[in-house]
Length: 279
Image (cartoon, rainbow, N blue to C red; front, side, top):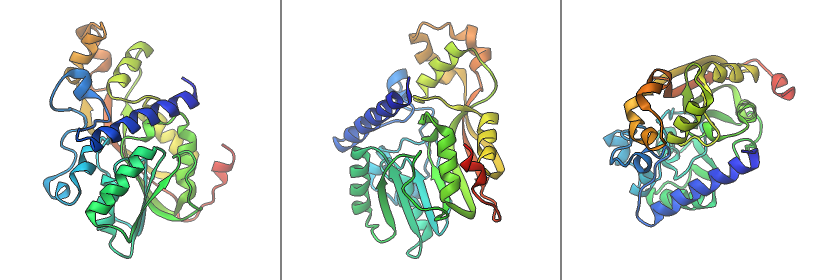
């Protein structure tokens, strides 16, 4: 798929997800509920604890399309691909009235849902939802203390641009703290594409070492990739069998090689954006 086609496919998918929530349904980033015909999504279930759930509107939780919750406190926070606003609203409570949280999303339907959830949560002063793309962040240089994102960067067809933009808007010493789907090791393309379809990653997840390399290339340091949920072959058995795949035959190439992970990095306190200018 071309970059344009990927972007349009993502917009359509997430716009439909927002509309399902507004009509009283649920949504899932990774598609396992629908694809596998199960009631519990092995990827997106149990992401938020009971205390967190009681702090936000039910519609925000239903619209959560993330694969983990890496939210960290800070003065100014930016959520890349903020969806229904769950992580923005949780972060707003943590940064307090003197802080600021931006939610960035390119989908009109999700932005409308997020703003409605903001109204219901009674959080007005320190939250702002912006329309835009994570490859072109509409914020000035050195303006953000923390960047979060929840299972969104894997959807981008230009991850180098995403990382470069993240580096640009972070203040020196700022933190990049996202949750994303990543892969581990090599596998044949046909299997990779089928399993990535199962986890809902339209543009494809990065291999964990590629993730580290791309972050380092734009200037980040202190880079960590910490697995939080490793997907086993049985999680995807029903879906893959439905695709005509001999699951037992391909198990050694799939089992344990797809995972949700916290990805953390820091923008050095004494640095410039010189690396980004050459990308």
